[in-house]
Amino acid sequence: MKNLRTILVKFLILILFFLPLSYLANSASGGIQQFELQVQKIPYSKSNTAKSESLELQFPDKYHNLSELYAELEYFNRTASNLIDYSFIGLSYWNNPIPLITLTNEQIVEDVKGKTYVVAHHHAREQITIEHTIRTIRDLVNGYLTADQTIGELLDRTIIYFIVTLNPDSLDYTLYQNPWQRKNMRPIDDDNDGFIDEDGPNDANGDGYVSIYSAEYKTGGWETWLEGSDEDGDGLIDEDSGGGVDLNRNYPIHWNDSRCDSGSTGNTLLEDYPGESALSENETKALVDFVVKHKFTHASSLHSGTTIPILGWGYTNDKQAESSLYEKMLDNWDSEQLLPGVYFDETNTDVDYTVAGGWSDWNYVTQHIITLTLEIYESTGAGTWHFYKYNGTHDIFESDVVFFDPPEHQIENVHRGLYDFEEHWLSLTPSIEIEKTQYIKLDNENKIEISLKSGSQYFNTTDNAKVKVRASNEELVTDYPDSIGTLFPTKTTKLPILLSKDIPENFTIYVNVTSGYASDLQLGMNVSASDFKATPGFNGIIALIAILVLIPILRKRKAV
Image (tube, rainbow, N blue to C red; front, side):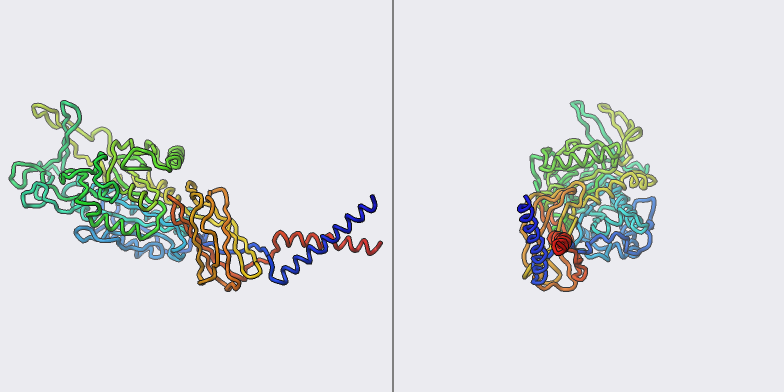
């Protein structure tokens, strides 16, 4: 028994003696060393660093006309220049700029941020979408300046693009002539009389409103028409209205698809006329070119006429592959009362029709963008319709309430009821987060091992997501895997990156992950070689323990 104990002690001594020597030898010869790498993550700085002045609307409590809107956005840009950039994505039919507000902390580099965009005012009469958008910009800027943690993080690591109106030509026409206009202002000779837009709706009775009338068919259903007069003397009323083309039926996806309920017609008088061809309109062409140029992960389009969030297909009521994701999101929005009083459904069946050539389908299919169509206002209740007259065969009802926009004194309240949700939606922009980074020094090269996770509440990446890695110094990155496993919000996935032998003092690593319908996610790390903590890794810790154990044993045996 004593001999066995002696053998075990000798064996332990050998192990404990050679292990630290092996570790020290590896260290001396440039062998494997593992350290925790201290990095500065880009983009979120955890402090609201951009300085600016707070924003107040120059034209409050009213609907902006086109010149006022441009002036408001120019004021935004002057006042919050470190957060806002004002430009345009293209020109409309009548050469009006289609305004773009880019909102982010401009002191943090752009190419490592997630991107999302919001487009308002596809349809002329939905002016509340413009007013809600400019107030959202105002509140995000002011929240950032007051050190709101959520907004600070959002604007430091996300670029938000706001297309404030896609339909600028129609704005003044809708405000001052025909509040029911839906389409753009491309001139069309609807009645083929050689004149263009000469007989549209007007305030024929001089009461200050362009009314809408409705009568019920005996066979069921309703016919509606707008107030007007025979302005061209042909015996017809409102047969050649101002414009145009329904911009939200003009996208190159299921364009003019006869299987759809809306957007498949050659009748230019109809509100959903899709144009002569897909992308026939300057406005939709400008948006498509803009979106293709950028790499967006999700986007939203604002509308009015009802109150409902629409996720999923437009051309069919079938479910998309992400339907379970949509259900989870909608359930949360409902339970958290982010959109109180709104009926939730993962498809658009509650809108009662399918659409051809729609914005959401084009973004989803061709650009792999998760889209939300948000209908933000509907005028309902007593007083919307009243009896007008009996014409001998039908009761005719009249309304001078434009269902799509609230009265001016209610604009701010409508916005306030939606702002928390808008902030929440923008915060869902898919991203990837650094959980932990380890530096491993090898004989002839260096290795960084990054532990990643999804930075979004809902969006996971798909399995085998494609990876691209680059560095600020050319030829620094020598190898990395082409793909990685799924990234989850609560689970990390390791990404090893091999670097060349000679590391510069300071460099930046950029990681890009492309993954199905949460595409082109980016992150960046600022790395300083002098910040490498010379903390021994697992082998080093074992070696240290071995030395501490070995010294008392050797002392004891010497004493014996």
